[in-house]
Length: 89
View: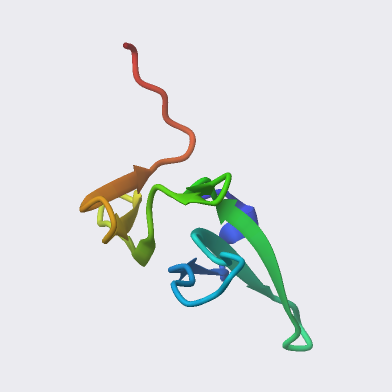
């Protein structure tokens, strides 16, 4: 992970099911300053597009390979986020 994420927490916002306006459906990073104040930044979005739900993030874990794994219980998918590495297609 980039140094900007060291000490930060990644949190899934699973998404609302009982609201007239949908909220959540994203992963955010929480950053703590020296006074204990917390700021929230977007990490991954796009699980809800034009009021259509296409995914619901559930959990985030860091794998032993350094990748970030995010589960999605709407599609049954596990996404892998990796920084600084590219693969030939």
